[in-house]
Image (tube, rainbow, N blue to C red; front, side, top):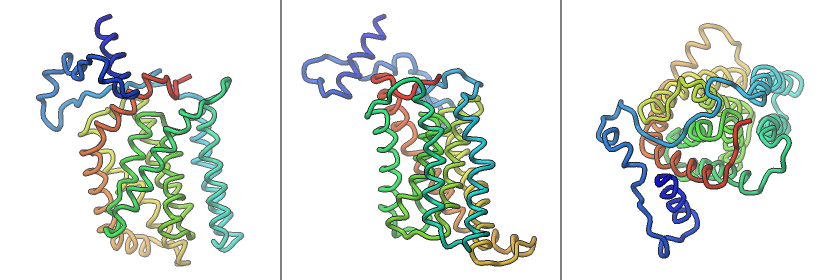
Length: 289
């Protein structure tokens, strides 16, 4: 009971600026984790994120799987085949609608509050601003890291939404093109898979676990989608020889992107997840149904 009172006091001070009038023990969670704080990089890094209904995927996640595996690839294929890859803005908007549908299933049976949508919007804004801030360093971007954090904190469909919309919005600065739908799909899958793996308990909210996933996801998922997409956009034949050549030429770029994701996750994953969890505890956001 005492621990709950201290948590409430800390949340009031952190979110409402009442620190002058309330005496708060800002280390209330360290009392329970004094030993874990001393562990090494590969050991458990304590955060508040805990998946609800562990191992069970909500129906909106199953809907997202259908969209990712069927509707979105089919939409991209229609754009490439019937519109010569020139209607990429329309295709991007259609994909954006697909990403939003499962997210709004979170609010089934109740009216969403503005602050619930605002939290996701802020994560998208952070990803877009982060990509713009590192414009001088090609492929050294924090978008994948923010997307993974969103998937872990708010679920698979929110991770997909943040990843896809971040790429679409940031391309308003970097330039729209036939690559935009492919980037939306690739980055969205990274956040979506992070949410599923966390829900299943296979991905832990630890620095080491998140960094390993981030490196492999960017290298295998983002690079694995964008490299063949480059062949499609350049109208080259998709042959084993061409695929090997495009993967080898894109490997240095993918390694830079994957390394950047590890760095950003190492530096930002714990403070961001803890702050997001405090907001969720304070306002009861995005509850699992």
